[in-house]
Amino acid sequence: MIRIPIRDAKSDLTTILLPRFVVEAEHLVSVPIFKTHVSIVFTNALKNMKELAQDKVHGEMHQTDLAMAMMDLWSVCRADLSIADMMRPAEGFGPHSTPCP
Image (cartoon, rainbow, N blue to C red; front, side):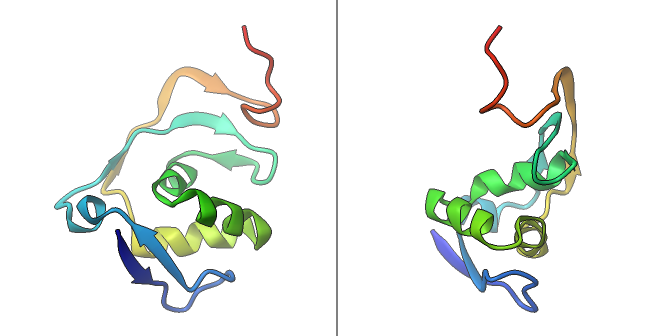
């Protein structure tokens, strides 16, 4: 893991731990599921990058301004290409409140 400082952070996050292979990758491709979200009307490529953060940071991101925390993460770790998975788009309040089929 590599600790990356977040310059000009818009949330309470000032650093973030990212896997070395992500930081050193020549290119990064994100394949998020197209979905709505209770905290942010629409998430896709941006929220998918949040999955790179450690569980502790997930909690910290939800305790601050979530949208700004995701933008802070995006400022240090951006996908070069994002391809939305539209096979099973999700809507509603997120996967925790959606009944299983």
